Image (tube, rainbow, N blue to C red; front, side, top):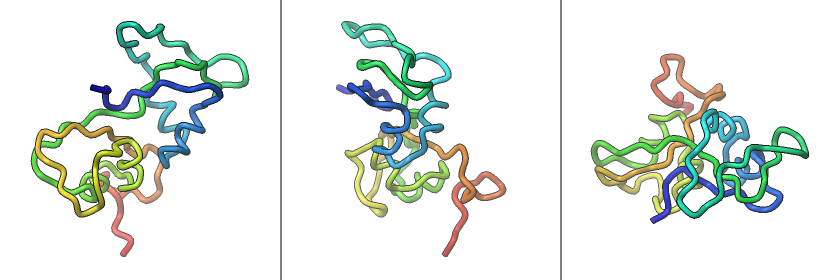
Length: 133
């Protein structure tokens, strides 16, 4: 089983290129890595960015993408996205096994959450995304 919210950087990847592939901002991915992830048994230790600027990663670098959230009760992808002030697209990028906005996410499911850290769309009370409709 692959651990949720952990990613192994490939050749030439950076925080920015990984973030773009997930539909988020490089700062989100960088901020999730304030403490090193533990390298799985048999994988080389975490190799922090070096050379080529602050965004460059060594091939094989293990990074966190966000936080693993255990769903306490049935909910929808859209509701989860709103709860964490992110989009359904970002949730699906980090969790390709979850479905469309209205699809149910079962209780006990573990979901990788890339909560928005710099989003003007966040409701002033911090309750999720503002309703723009």
